Image 1: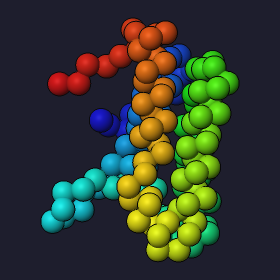
Image 2: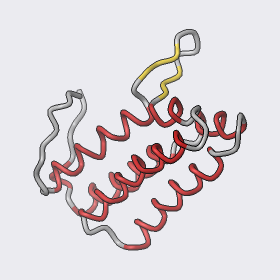
Image 3: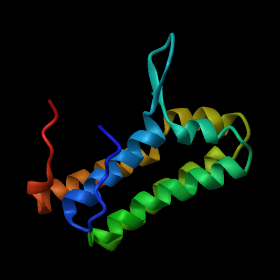
Image 4: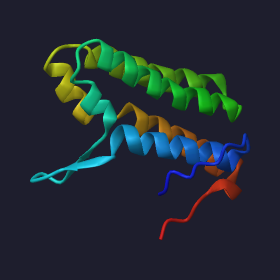
Length: 129
């Protein structure tokens, strides 16, 4: 996936931006030796307080984009809850960093968005090759 993201407000453009943000936050790098993908969420979460606030803001961007898709409020609240839970537990020193490595709130939120779009806007699906 390239970073030539569309700027439009159409469903396809929003979906691509959400998918790109999730990749950056959760799967941008692979840890050598264990072949485990990590992203900026886990890495910047290592910086006490400030890192967690930045990661929360980036996760909130996905929820904001989902709002632009006119998703139901209960789905948006669930997504916001994922981000809040990740931020709250991630703020705990050491344990929170390990938690960030395992609990991928942005991936969970992407799954909610994809399920919604696949049902209500199936034309926005991209077939991976």
